[in-house]
Length: 210
Length: 210
DNA sequence: TCTAAATATGAGTAATCCTCATATTTGCAA
DNA sequence: TTGCAAATATGAGGATTACTCATATTTAGA
Image 1: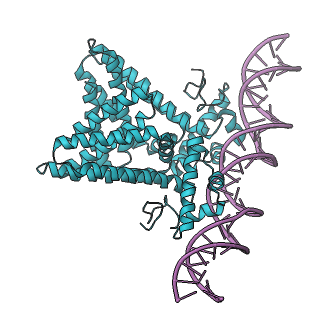
Image 2 (image 1 turned 135 degrees about the horizontal axis):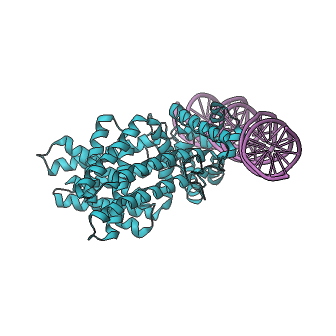
Image 3 (image 1 turned 180 degrees about the horizontal axis):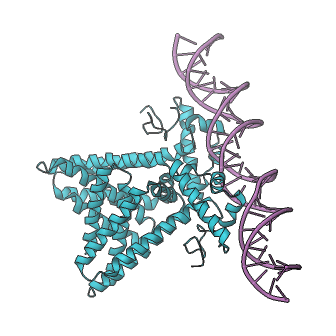
């Protein structure tokens, strides 16, 4: 891993400006991201101020801009890290699937994991929703759904070699999107209602998949 | 209708600041909203500048702030108008439903109408997505889903008097949300894919409803 | 016609993003 | 070790923009 943000950056306007190569700067970039996360958690995405991020991280404004081209790049990096973790989680979940029943369990587990992460870290909700306003970040999000869908589709093809691959691809994309949407909705309503909604969406997604 | 924005304003921070009572000011407020719409269509929500809205509408900055407390109030008013139109459309669609088959047709028609409006007016996509960043507007959106769900639930109770009312309420809410989500997703991808996605979501929503 | 409320104005204030010229530190080759 | 180029760090300040407010004008109705 050459890029310490943990996220690919080539051609990505929402990502970091340049890669910190020295240990000192890598640590500082981490402090910047941690500071941004803390501030979003305390005051929301809207109230994120570059000057406060710098102060909290104990660096100067200039250093902030040395590694992030603009404000949305910080939020973008946080979202991408989250998505990357999700992708790993999905890849793990799909690895051992060899039957429809496995698929059912794996998918169900995925959604639960996502949901619990969101519940445990409400800051992700603010980060995630804050990202929706930005066209570039929205597109990145969509691309991520597709990547995840491709992962699931690959598994589907394994357990259903006779089905139309194109249809499986579409099903997987919809299922992933349903899962994501379920969580966005679920964390916007009271807990009990959210639990019920996640279950309902999970059933729908599984129905689409299988 | 006392409020010329066409939207309720009491206690709504995202709405207009004060109600223009005279004909002159009503027309000016309309010009402001039209200018904002045009600017969003041309440059996106991010690039919306209050000074440009005022200039385009042919009014002063001060006049803008006379009727809108802040920038998000303008976008909020546009979103609410759109939602209000949607609510009327849903109410109309549900009016004549007396059987599951009616319901199927009505719901299908609703989604199609929404979808076509979005396709015909791409500016609504920018307005809608731009609103997602704002917590207050997000909550308003959610409340709207609930209101629409309640409308549909009422119809469901009529054609299924023996079912659990609470379950119908939940089903209707999910169906409405699926419909909205389908359109948001559909207008973010190529046309052919969007058409297919809308159909898939429509089937899901109907399965949930009936 | 007269007056109070409604409406209109736009220069100015405050907040904030981001740049850039300059200074310091680091890694490494000689 | 020493010297140097690249990487990193700094923060004052330029530029933009949301929003205010004291003042001027217009409207509706008595």
